[in-house]
Image 1 (cartoon, protein in one colour):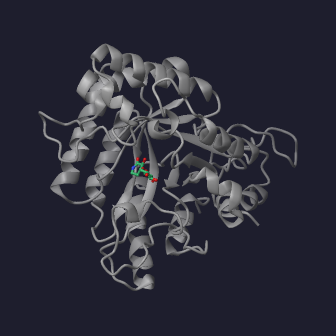
Image 2 (image 1 turned 90 degrees about the vertical axis):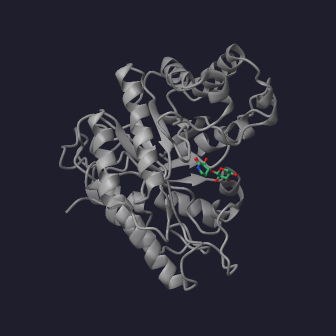
Length: 376
Ligand code: XIL
């Protein structure tokens, strides 16, 4: 039985097709749980709060082509996920082959899959330095950059208005080694617009879809290193500046590409989540995986260390605030971005994700289940 069906069946609660409730509804429906005062199928009446329990919804980045031609892959996504996000498809490199073209085939197929299976779809991502088509390097002026960025966001967010409830509007805006004078990462947008591209992106997305959850997404904030401390501080400074100027923003996406050989700075990460929450922002875990290139060769040892690292990371966040969702960046070791950058010296395949190459759950999946199941 799929996890999704089991949870709904066990609760006997009628829910909007896309919800997977597990915890007492916290009042306002959340963008990604879709939790709402559904009707109880058994009684037909309004389900009580004790019946409607919203879990921390779980999901994964998906390669939409594999949904079409790989049964086991599609089955794993259907069994484990309430949320999907395109690993590609909504990045400029996929969406914008030329200045005049928008190619929506991939995201259209993914939103159709999500809608057909009662899932929510996240949008990733509107303003990033990465995966940019060559023609964008020709954007020559501030006015041209503003025009292209606004047109892109208006067209893309507009197309999926009311269907994609949560967008990584801005991805990885903070420099890898930020300083007080230079906190931001280089990108065509920062080059042409300065930090104004942040506000422009957020305000444009909000104007197109006032109901969409606007997320700023970043990584490498979870270890007890000077780099992670500096990134946390730079991220918080940016968030405070945006909130002080009433720029629309709803959540911070903590990517969670965890270095398996490094410990989690539980105190530093928890304090960061407290600060984010104090700004009135939600927290999402958006791209969880464990980079194991420096872990022991033994698959058992690696899986245990990866699971423990994920547990420490999720614990440091969930001890402070319930994330609106937990997503991994892929679902199976068979398809992961990790070897693009983090191959192992011994040549063994990476094992960063909750399911192994044969879709068998690993220790990490148990950790994810522990954090997303009904509270005792
Ligand atoms: C990666 C994809 O997984 C790769 O397939 C693609 O070639 C490059 O981008 N952080 C992010 C994601 O926000 O968009 C990146 O995804 C991984 C790092």
